[in-house]
Amino acid sequence: MVLLLALPGCAQVPTDPVARAAYEEANDPAEPVNRVIFAGNQWVDRNLLQPPIRAYEEYVPDRVRNSVRNFGRNLEAPSIAVNDVLQANFDRAWTTTQRFVVNTTLGGAGLFDVATDWDLPHHDADFGQTFGVWGIGTGPSIQLPLLGPSNVRDTVGTVAGILGNPLGFVQADAVQTAQMVGSGTDLVSQRADMLKVTDDLEKNSMDYYVALRSMYAQRRAALVDEGRSGGPTASEEFEVIEDIGPVTPAEPSIQDEP
Image 1: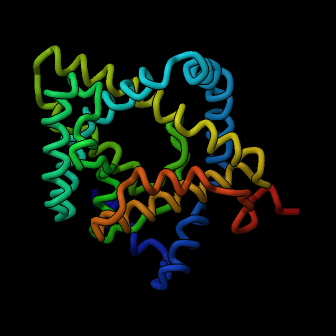
Image 2: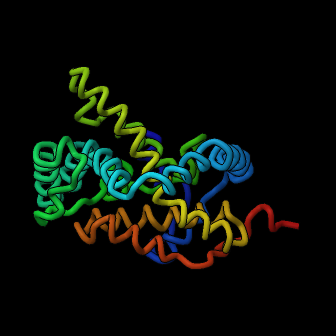
């Protein structure tokens, strides 16, 4: 945490919003190492993850995939509510709490999203976003083994999310089992949802590594802005990302050097 709090002073970070966004997208001093990890992640993704996930997308009915997605999302609700409170988004925290209660009871343990029909929309919130709302800078880009693009702030946020998940303190075997199953199904759902985005991005970008790094930085910056304003839902933000067009590197990468 001390390292995280010191991040804003590690480099001269621009104060202009546009310049700061560009700086954070390109802040990758460990790019050679990150590219090696990225290559390993790509091999795992293409050879081990994508084949079953593409079969899942093709052969599993939409209603079943929606239930899997709903189940994973519902288990994230307590952690989202905690971060809403930490961001002083109390209305959103109350909405998330109501969603969790409604979908856990009337929605069959979260398999059905009854709450959205009751004008209780889903949104995302996590500790990396909370740190950003508090004004903590992203720090350098990081490629996490198996998890993909991140940065120092969001990596610490990921650890905080694991340790600070309220469901993690519930010792009941049924809750622990549901949480493990939910984490796995949520990862499958998220990767399935992103297949079209990443397929288009890899096909249309000059440098897939830089394009993914840029997309991640833009998405996280938008999520932090959303947390600060209590603005549009993450689902609306995701729809914008799905419409992303051809992406080119915003700055020279090490592959472009002579």
